[in-house]
Image (tube, rainbow over all chains, first blue to last red; front, side, top):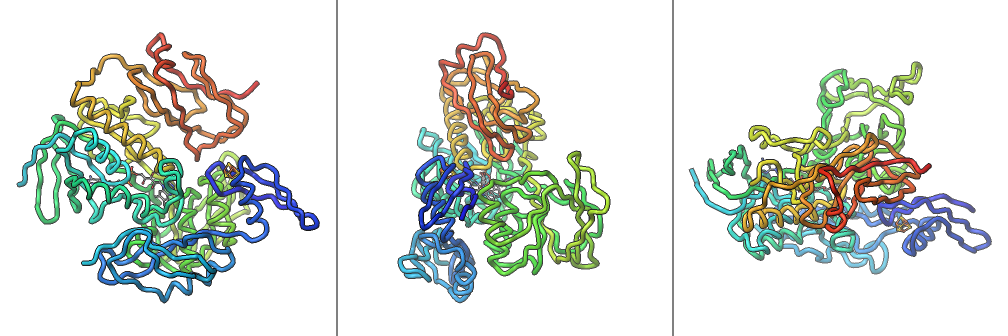
Length: 119
Length: 415
Ligand SMILES: Cc1cc2nc3c(=O)[nH]c(=O)nc-3n(C[C@H](O)[C@H](O)[C@H](O)COP(=O)(O)OP(=O)(O)OC[C@H]3O[C@@H](n4cnc5c(N)ncnc54)[C@H](O)[C@@H]3O)c2cc1C
Ligand code: SF4
């Protein structure tokens, strides 16, 4: 299997060619180590950080921006959104506060992206 | 009417305004106020909930709210005076700022210096002149972002995005995640306006079609948008007969670029740059009115917030220098550039310090040298694109080598 992908780790956006033959993975075109790691996961099981919002009760704002602490497999993103549709939090919230502990994947947390004061 | 006397007024509380304010405070300018039109501090960052901020400045990847929260926390911690819900209406030639606050009414603030950090406004349907009906359901991408992420509303059910700038791409993903069907992104140029990484993670991840070299020609609908017409264009952007296509949708979102917001200074008569649409500044980001400094997207459209913060901090140093030592308006060298370059900021250099230049090219180029004739400096680029701002750092010693009054940037093909 041969795949051309664009490294999205940083804005440089290197074109990386990845070849998988008999379980051996070889990567070409990356300018740094991060690109190597990214290309390998991208070809086999692409992952993404998910960001969205959830409603917050009694807060200075109505919606709390949240993110996953680690990237989730790309194929579960829509399922993740459905799960999060039922989540609501209550102010006050601290930046980085854990909203959900093991979210779909073990050790992936959903955390608050900002603080919300209670009003 | 409320009257105040301060050393510095910062207009706008986005990353530019807050970074400038904090830096100025640290330099000893404690008697200052920040004015913000919105109900909250932070500019556009509270609504930019995606990751991609701060890789250079904080050396980690943050979301917009996380990035700006660090600045807001700092402003609150040191106790800088901020007025939200307050719009600056006028700046006089003497540095007096007239503003209006929803509850307090009109405010008159006498100040020794002003930093303009008013950000940008989005271009709309009328800037790109797309004919047709005038139904409901036509938005700009930044507005949709605010509606979804701050207010919690979805704009429609089936959307087409016009323009492939980063804001539009990011909204394509955001809408899809929220269950809106994004039926395509229409781009008139043969290359996308946004970063490659956003093409991958915002469009390809969700199989959203990208129509390059396509123009939107009509928006149709009686009360609500019903469909949009598009056509393929040739390399001179002329429509190709027989390639017309209709896409059914109830929402059309424009992501066709940003324009620096400078309405406030139009009356003072400072020199403006027709390439950036921001003021002409020197390397302290001082405009041609000595008390007035400009930074962030109101100076020039930056794509990275890290550069915004960096130049805002330099503007604060400029204000400090101006107020404490009295910056002489004497020797400034003029920056010029060749046809392949769209702009270079700053447009003047004092040669009193090291300088970071920010520039953009007009078209994508390959295998080129960026050179500065006067000092025998050049740098090679394998690829250089309009959507990625180039930053060039030059040391003061190098700048002092310039003999004449000019410093000339040139982009030339490797021969
Ligand atoms: C959708 C989107 C995605 C982006 N993605 C990224 C990314 O991934 N990574 C990255 O590094 N950058 C990104 N950026 C760019 C970054 O957000 C901007 O460069 C940055 O916000 C510009 O900061 P600013 O302070 O100049 O302007 P703004 O954040 O626009 O702030 C200007 C402020 O001035 C206020 N104001 C204007 N006029 C007045 C007035 N007359 N009186 C009082 N207040 C006034 C406005 O209300 C506003 O709050 C993105 C931008 C957008 C829109
Ligand atoms: S390979 Fe390295 S330099 Fe290239 S895009 Fe990926 S992270 Fe950036």
